[in-house]
Length: 414
Image 1 (cartoon, helix red, strand yellow):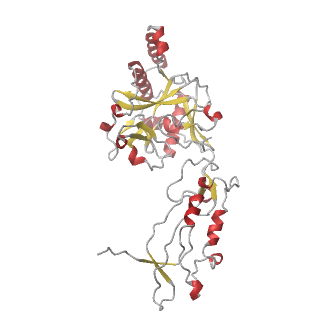
Image 2 (cartoon, one colour):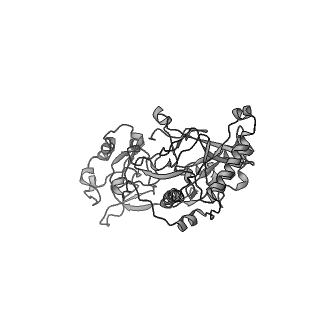
């Protein structure tokens, strides 16, 4: 015996551009004052582009219009829709263009506002939209616009220390400089040929002015608070996500380079400075085109360790349709079901605000001054951001999002 199918009743309404209705099954009793259409329940569908919408519109058979035969017109039906079988809606969206540039080209990149039905190219919006938003989407004119340059919150020193979980810095800059000097001296004692073959990572050098370091940390704290993100300087393993036991560098397809003992010491040294509030010389700023981004607040040398990419660790399979724009590959296993990513949407650090380059433009590729490197650190995968050249104060930081395994859509980047 075939399972029964539920039937629901709804009044006739205007056919929205991003929804499809099935033909009417039958009419209600003649005693009803209002004409009712019975149809099978259909879940509302969000089309990713005008091109896909028009393709589907040609295949969907529109329901019968009873008012054409019985003279009953529902109040929700507009006059211009009656008698044309829905062609008015098709014509409307077939000629839809971008409200910003006026062009109707690249229809697959036009987003349609669910409130005003106007279209916008994803790269014409500010900040640029890199992927189709899930669910409903409203254009900037139909939502409360964000300020072009949001003011960063004025935070007290106590608030900043509590937010980052900092320890009171008891060491002076002179003592830290002496420690760093000893490390450099030990490095020079080795063979010159050895250092030509293997270039070592350098620890970042924080600015000496304590008030300037507070401003740097305040900029990061304000950006994280604005996005409802808690600060974390390390990988976190949350219940319901990938456990720490899943992070095994030996599972990497093709193997993973091992972080040397000296470079591991540099990583630990940078972490020790961060815990004491000696942050890297970086400032989070807001740009109308790129959103939150990071720029150098002091000179940075080539091969300087900028930051470790931090956030929640989860399986790639569970995040394939995630709308987070800052996912970072952590492990590419031979078995795809064991591959891992870093998700900085709930917890993260300054690394999540560093933007990527446009791989399709030579001018954009020249901006790259960082590289993203995955290391085997004591058997676990870690992701480090390292300077690839000397960086001047005021220069923004960029790296290649496509430095690993697959093509990230960077053609809409600045």
